[in-house]
Length: 398
Image (cartoon, rainbow, N blue to C red; front, top):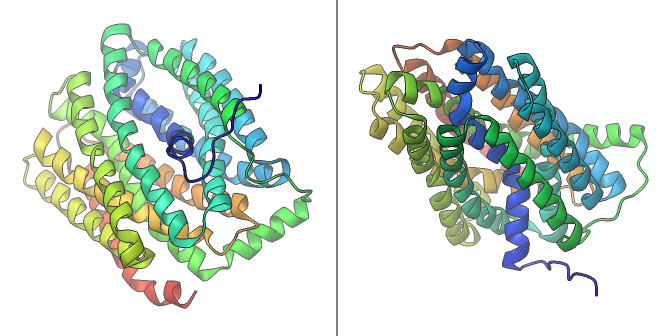
C-alpha cells in the first residue's frame, strides 16, 4: 500500500516544509560551536576558519540561483532529493578533512546542495497558498524554525565538547539521509515540471528583476538577514574569546537569543491577517533597528557580557522572524507561475548579503572588543528600517 502524502493546511506538512527551509541555517548552527576547535586542530587562524562560514554562504547563495529554475523544469521533489544527495556526499568529505582547505571545500559543497531545500520549499508554499495565507504559512514556519537555532547550537556544543568536531558532520550526514526518505515517501509534488529553455529562464529572471515591489521586498529582507550573519560569524569568537564562555556555554547563549525567532513567528501568525504584510514588516524592521543599536551601545561602553549581547540579539531575532515572513510572501506574490525562479533570486540576495556581512565581520574581529560585531549588526538593523520607510510607496503601488 503506498504511503499517504502530506496534505496542505496540515501541521505535518508545515513541519516538513519548516525542516526543508531551515536545513541550511541548521547546518551553520550545528557547526558554529566547533569553529575554535577546528582552528586549533588544523592550526588555522581565525580568518581561515571563518571561511568555513563565508564560503558556505557563498555556496548557499550560488545554489539559490540554480535550484529555482531546476525545480520549475523538473518538479519540486526531484530538485529537493538531488540537493540532499549532494549535501550528504559533501558531509562525508568534511568528516574526513585533514586540513582547512579541504574542510572549506566540503562546506561549500554542503551549502551548494542544501540550498536547494530552502529555495524549493519556499516555492512549494507559493504553489499551495496565496497572499496573506502564504504569509501566515511563512510565519508559522518561522515560529517552528525558532526551535532549530535553539536545538542546533546546543547539540553542536554537546557534540563538540564530548565527541569532537568530527561528530558534527556524522550527525549532519544522518540528518540529511533521513530527510531524503521523508521527501521521497511523504511529500507530494506541488508543481509538475515544464519544458523551459535557458533563454526562457533568463527571460523569467529579467521579468522578476525589474519588478520594483519584488526588488524592494527583497532588499529589505536581505538587509535584515545580513545582521543575522554578523552574529553567526562574530559571536563564537566574541562570546568564547572575549567573554570567556565554553563551547557549551556559548551554545546556551546562542540558543537563548535564537528563541526570539519563535516569539517573532508567533506574533506574525497572530497579527498578519488583521494588520497586513507591510505594517508587520515595519514592526519587524523596528525591532531589528532598536536591537542593533542596543548591541552597539553595549560594545561601545565596554560591557560586552552574555546578557547584554544575548538579550538584544533575541529582540533582533523577533524582528527578523516577523519581517522575513512578510517580505518573502510579498515578494513571491506576483509570480505564481515562476515561484521557483523568484524564490531563487530572493534567496540569492539574502545569502549574498550574508556573505558580504560575514566576510566583513570576520576580517574586522578584534580579540579585545565586541565593537566590530556590534557596529555591523546595528548597521544592518538601522538600514533595514530606513529602507522600509523609503520604499513604502513603491510596495504599496504594486
